[in-house]
Length: 329
Ligand SMILES: NC(=O)c1ccc[n+]([C@@H]2O[C@H](COP(=O)([O-])OP(=O)(O)OC[C@H]3O[C@@H](n4cnc5c(N)ncnc54)[C@H](OP(=O)(O)O)[C@@H]3O)[C@@H](O)[C@H]2O)c1
Image 1 (cartoon, rainbow, N blue to C red):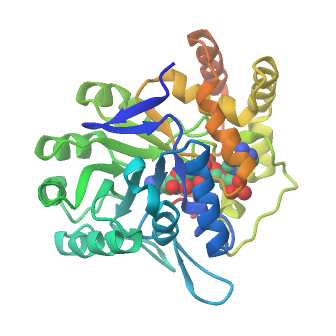
Image 2 (image 1 turned 90 degrees about the vertical axis):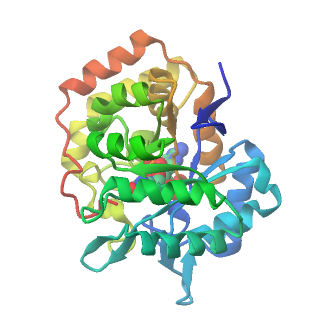
C-alpha cells in the first residue's frame, strides 16, 4: 500500500493529514500556545506531513489574547518547513451573524500576505478558497491564483465546499489541485462529485472525516460540550436522535474494528481511504494518543466488499443532517 498521496503537480502528502483547527477554534477554548505547538510538532515526529489551517481559525485565549491557528502551525513546523505540506485558506471571516464571504482580489491579496507572515513561510503549499463568494466569479478567483502561483506566493490552490459548476469554471482558468469538502459516513452528499474529480485529476481532501469525532464511538448522549466555544453543542449528530439514528452503524464499526484490531475511528477513515485513491482525510485532534490512532488508519485495509457493506447500511440510515446547522463551518 502506498504511504503517501499526490496532490496536484507533486505535493506528496501522508495518507492522513492533520486538521489543526481545533487547537484554536470551534472545539472549546483554544489550547495553550506552547502546548499546541508541542502537539503539532509531535504530529510531525510521528509521521504526519500534511497540515491544514486557515486565516479565520482563531479563538480567544484565557488571557484575552487571540489564538491564531496559522501562527501555531508555523511555529511548530519552522525547522522542518521543507519536509511538510502546509495548507491554509482565505475568503471567510467570522461574525456574530455567521460567516462573511469575501473573495475580492484585493481582499485575497491582503489575506495571502497575512497568512504568509503568520505562518512564517515564503510560499503556501496549498491555498484554498474557504467558501464560494457569490459576488465574485470563479474565473476572477482563478486568475488571481494563477498570478499568485507565478509570483511564488502559493504552489497550488483548491476550493472548499465547492460545487461541480464552480470547480469546472475555475479549473478551466487555473487547474485546481484539490477540493476540501465535508465528507464522512455522516455526510456523503459530495460523493456525486467523484466522477468530476476523476475526470479533472483533483484530490478530495475530506474535512470533519470523523463526523466531528462522533464516528470514534467515544461519545454518547450524555457527553456535553461548552455552548459558547464548542460547536458540537449545536451539532445534530450529538443529540439523542443522532445517537439513535447511528446506533446500527456504530455497532458495525465496532465489530469491524474488533476483527481488524483497529478502532471505530480508524475504520471510518480507512473506509474513505480505501474507497478512492484520491481522498485524503484530515482528522483533527489535540491529543497525542488520538493523533497516533488517527494516523494509524493509513494501515487499515478494507476490501471493496466491506466498503460496499458499510455503504448499504449508510444508504438505509436516516441521519439528522448538518443542513442549516448554525454550527456549520
Ligand atoms: N474547509 C472547511 O470549511 C472546514 C470545516 C471544518 C473543518 N475543517 C478542517 O478539517 C479538520 C478536521 O475536521 P474537524 O476537526 O471539524 O472534525 P473531525 O476531524 O471529524 O473531528 C474532530 C473532533 O474529533 C475528536 N477526535 C479526533 N480524533 C479522535 C479520536 N481518535 N478519538 C476520539 N475523539 C477524537 C477531536 O477531539 P480532540 O481534539 O479532543 O481529540 C475533535 O473534537 C479541521 O481541523 C480543519 O482543519 C475544514
